[in-house]
Length: 228
Image (cartoon, rainbow, N blue to C red; front, top):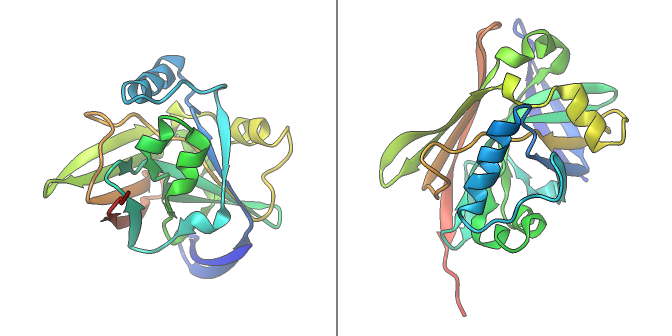
């Protein structure tokens, strides 16, 4: 367990909130549309990653992999980010944030669970109350940009109506129970435009067009040499 301090944006006020995080869960293949879901599976198969055992599927990683830093270090040049919404349970409430499931793609080709553990998971420092956005959840947009060879390109984009509803996602992952206190769950992602590829910098956001606000974060990817 470790503490992360967020800012809760309630539109007319912002409040600091320190949460003790003791679980991190990466939900994968969470799309409502089986065609779009299979497209993402095919995208991963194209780079040598086996099909999942089930859809959706829930991977556990160390909670300490979560970070708000503006850079992460990865071994080798085979990792890449994925924008996702993040749900965090706390004292019976659920908060919504935005993060990147940064993953080592080379390791993913032989063991997805291990690949999820290989890289830090950047998360934005701002949260919203789920109850403030659940009424227009499907209208919100996830988007990411990647800096590749000095050029900023749109990497992912989609609205949350393409993902499993929140209640369904939580019920499937926790046996019909509520999201546990101190659990941060990443909710799935969209296919990469132009295919999965590494970047020097990754930017991601969750946009609420109804309340006209956006959660944003960005980080540099520092590549460490692989020896031996």
